[in-house]
Length: 207
Image 1 (tube, helix red, strand yellow):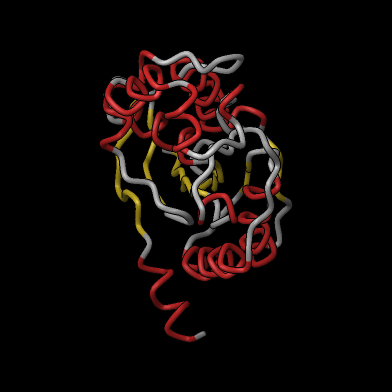
Image 2: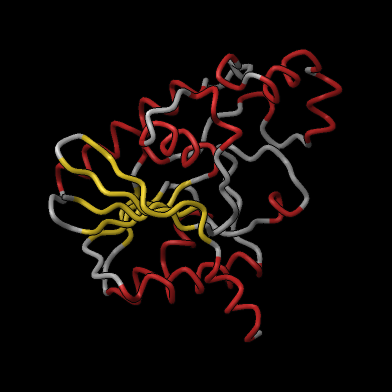
């Protein structure tokens, strides 16, 4: 059995003001750095054997405090990279709604049908992310592994683990610095924890 701890990166300014981020390499803001520290404190109870993260700074910065606590290196994993929003990257939801009205409505109502202009589809994200997950499970049999990624990647991975299609994308909660835990054994998955942010409450009560 392999235990996977799947973490969403901490807050960036483009999470706070809400812009489509995708492959634009934004760093954590001050709140995001606090959240990354809170994640590391929460994960101290586990014996962690490896830590992988999306190659984008916000994911690497979220993973680093946990790596420091565990005495491990953060390994960049391309399969965890954020979705390529293409022409939507950097735009606000209001700007997208104005320029791509029909497609934006489809994104809100039926996200699995959307091909982002010059970008990816959810099924492409799911395929590469699941390939990365399955390789990690084979590489770390019997161990506990941390994966740090992005809201879109985490949602489609959780849909896959639960046997849901990407049409359930919006039904998966995934807040900044959320922790999810599931187990893998012989190609089957069992979800143990979803979108846990309790560790953030204790952190900000101390600040």
